[in-house]
Length: 356
Image 1 (cartoon, rainbow, N blue to C red):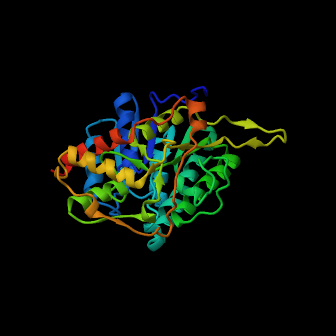
Image 2: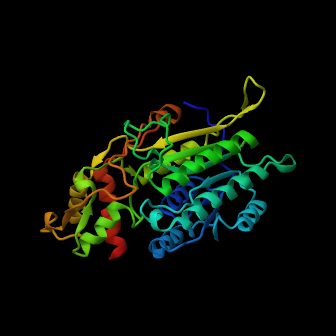
Image 3: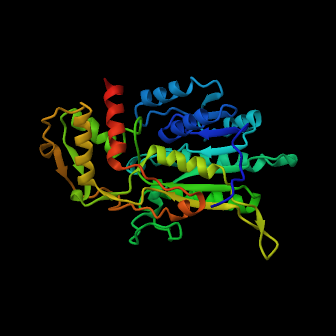
């Protein structure tokens, strides 16, 4: 277990993507657990998916007086600079990104703007936070993705694996984030930790994710498409497990040290956060439908079989995702363990309440 060298108490924390699924869940957890912290949230509230979901999440967060929300884009350098200069955050958590594999095929501009230029702006303000002898940012934590593994044949996926062959632009931008963070850690001694998330799901999630999209289609009486003829496996990770992992990682910044050559060793780490238990998509759909029926979202006599369509693999997709999260467990004593049925039950109950 690593020593906790970053104290969250009495700190100012910047969370980008604060109205997003993971961002809002993280902010809520931090504000619930720590009364004497200040959180600065940035989000551009773009319409990639239903903005009312983002507004719903923000409404929950607005009940906390120590949460300050700034509507803006991290690709806006002046906004990011002004925010850092005004609030001088001790910890930065970059979760803002244009998400989605398939969307990146038709809308590449959005990914370059948010995931490359936006992340560069965050790295730059972290770099300059040390100017004039200031203590600066103690830890930069940022979202990477399991998509960086591409069509990696070796499973489970380890952070030691070579990941130089992305199969989508989204994956390429996330790998670029890791490379940029490494360079900035090396050059400017910024302690940074990247987290490769594996298929995050749960209440108030993203409608573009399979479980949410399937639910929307099933309730509308439409057919759902199951790719690769059902021969896909995903390492689903419940949102509370993701947040628990982020909070633990925030508390340990990679140590600054000097190598034998007298040059700094980059204070840089990468971790997988995944359930390490891939589920077949057909089994996943069966469990989802059962929980939707249980929650009253679907009628008790719903005929799932007539609403399933098995189709070929889509460009940018991969047949399996599977996390080796042993490093996270070794260093932080934590591994995701929410059972899929429990997580989908929580989602189904939230969906029934939110949409009714």
